[in-house]
Image (cartoon, rainbow, N blue to C red; front, side, top):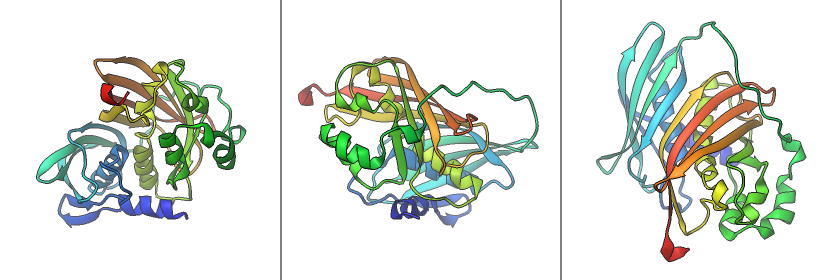
Length: 288
């Protein structure tokens, strides 16, 4: 297991403080604010630890204030409802005495029912895309400094963008983006861990998709970007340490906000999760 995976699992292993109260910490990597996917993942861990025998099927979250990576985050779980089929939890993340994030999550007993899905789009498999070594030698030297720095550092989530050439120019492209994702090391077999890790990863590229038609990326200093809300639905079992295709599109952007959707498929073409997000995408003229 890589050190990045060890660190991710440690971040998701919340410290219980009291009944319905947990404490999470952030990696000390010099970021000015907490990564949104971290808060989603930790909040889902907190909610899951108050539910027995049921897995989450959906979550809906709002980012209220930027998280401070220098201090712990307190997660308070409200056990709203324990029904025969569904369980509902509300989680509030608190720092400096203020709510920085809120999330509702729903859990469902396993039961049979109607079954259908949209087919996975025809995309090159991850093996057909440039390897990490090829990207480092052939592609990274051509990328802007912030993008290059992101791909050079050790990460718990491996990304293989299908349209990686978008990072090499400012030409607008079709309003979609596809990327293969998986953890960089093996995870424990507990399905709850894989769900929480996917919740963490689901925030990594979605907002950036809303800038694809404009030839811009969230890596640019002149772009102020931040997740505003995030919704995630789990459909079928999966492993986050196997390749998953995250196919994303952006139906709309306007008023300094971008909206993007995502479907996540496993290698067998099964739709395992769906995602939607709106975020701030504001251009700073002083840095343009």
